[in-house]
Length: 398
Image 1 (tube, helix red, strand yellow):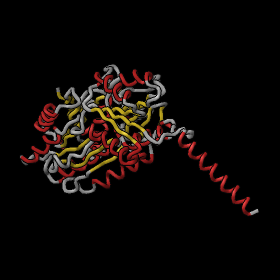
Image 2 (tube, one colour):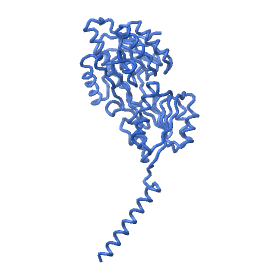
Image 3 (cartoon, one colour):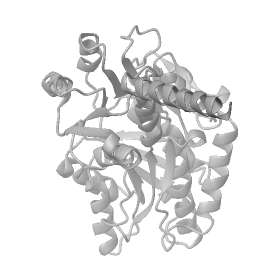
Image 4 (cartoon, one colour):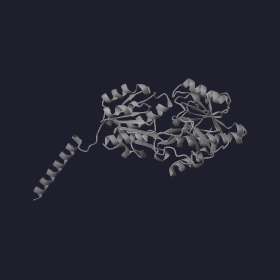
């Protein structure tokens, strides 16, 4: 009798082992044990924006190792997107990520229904019909901008308290790429962060009309410094503005820098205070996990979901502050930043775009805004939509 039981048990074990083998071999679970992941960059890793985005690629490599093959294309202009996209598709990519702003991605996605296309959002996606395999995502940048503005304001207040400048010299400079809502939302949040510490501060903005030009960005920063700005930040893609601040510091000028995307502590150790960055890693890792397990990306990602669009801030690790320069930053800066981050983690950030301010829309001068009742950014889309230049306190340098 015992022998019969033993034979029965062994038979069951063999059958079970065979079932498990078939289950995995035939992929009956619907998942995948290997992926080919593509990345298309608008620039290369020598520039802060692309370097910051490439950290997500590094995170995928670290987490999945031999389970993934990663293919990359760099320096792809928006109007040259089609060829590298098709090339990655032919090489068998299961999912492709883009940090550029080309509409070609959404247009070509239906031709490759077995590939998931994930693009850093570049437009308001509300009401836009997109292919089932097309997704957009972006960290809520205004949160990091506001907190970095607090760090800038703390430094300006320290300079005032120590008699280095007077309150009417509390002038902030911003090197901006284009006059669009993404850039304007960012520099306005930054400025309002400054004003939460220094209520009399004003800001001057200089546009370069390009995302990436070291010469133009450095020249714009130098102009702002000559115009009396004591803090410079940027929404462009090179180290030019940081170098301009560092050279001013070398000449005993009291000018400091607030970074975006990549720490500037190495290139500007004497002037860089802190950097805010969008963390692309949480979304990219979750999207890869979703494809690996044959799940819908938006059901795996931890974020605020708007159809196939996703956004999040400090609360989900999509935005962070890095490399606070203790010897340069004003005392209490870390505590002030932490307090603001805690507020973001508890709410939706409605306190940022709020106050006794009015502004005019850059896209439609007939539209104005009064911020007494506040404005909610990223309310229904991951792409920033605030495009009002605040009256009297922000000046655009022609």
